[in-house]
Length: 406
Ligand code: DOR
Ligand code: ZN
Ligand code: ZN
Image (cartoon, protein in one colour):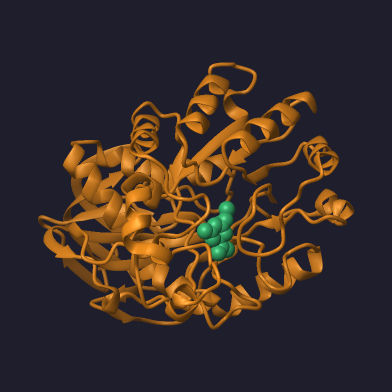
């Protein structure tokens, strides 16, 4: 195992922001000094070091749609952008409706994934017994609106059966459908944790804000928001057509403002991307393909806007890492740089100014809706368990992502 010392770097996580040395020994962050002489010493002067991000909402498309993305290409794209962990969604082919199919996905990821992985379980029309028994997942994903795949569930009795199990349920539910789901969840006793994926509307943030005021519910409800709903409105959809078409769709400036208000006052718990690649040809075809890529533009876009708004970078780290691990009770990662935490992290150069260029991205998806967007800062290198995995556009070592434990 490699011992690495990064000297004099600004170390930023949810709990600290100070210039110090970062030492990685035996795959963990360690308190300097050590009697060991490091294999590598890096001068971190003027640079920043963050704990690896987690993107709790990606579609890496395997199995079934590997031509759009797969667990290797998606996880490499993630690492190149400081995302060292991800939760993948169940709308693959076949969908993740059984524990056997979940085990197949985990086996594939064990072989192919460069980043740490978790897999959502899918709520299907006939898999109640499987949902009841499944473990080792961030939660069950329940689709209540139309999107990619055939997972939409209209039958409210099925929603009730699922909520009554008292487990974590993540919803794709938009506006009034989310309001109805919350009502039914409360009628069922609000037993498990309810998570709203990709918030996009003011009314969703306002409902969650009011629910969180109830001490009985505060710790049981969470909400994520994606960069596209923080940076773009329906005007971008009109300008860029299918390349800005996703579900939930882009909303109004007032909705976008509500997302930032939710970030400011803590109503929004953490960020996610809903990385949902489709090929250029698909996007230009007659058919509608919902979804845009996002995992590689996740951190730099948010970083740029946090700097512009003068927000705390500790809060940025919390919302791209520690908050998410905590919300889903991940056992083997905490998103912190503290002594003894697993050494997943990345070095960031805040002085570089660059525009987003799809040619430099690693996803199989060869386009981005954020083409040309000016960024503050650029990733320098990424470490997973203390081993250098990405630097200067090169990947190092092997696919060694670990299964996230719940
Ligand atoms: O735009 C979207 N694309 N929204 C979703 O909910 C699913 C995703 C996909 O899988 O393509
Ligand atoms: Zn969704
Ligand atoms: Zn999604």
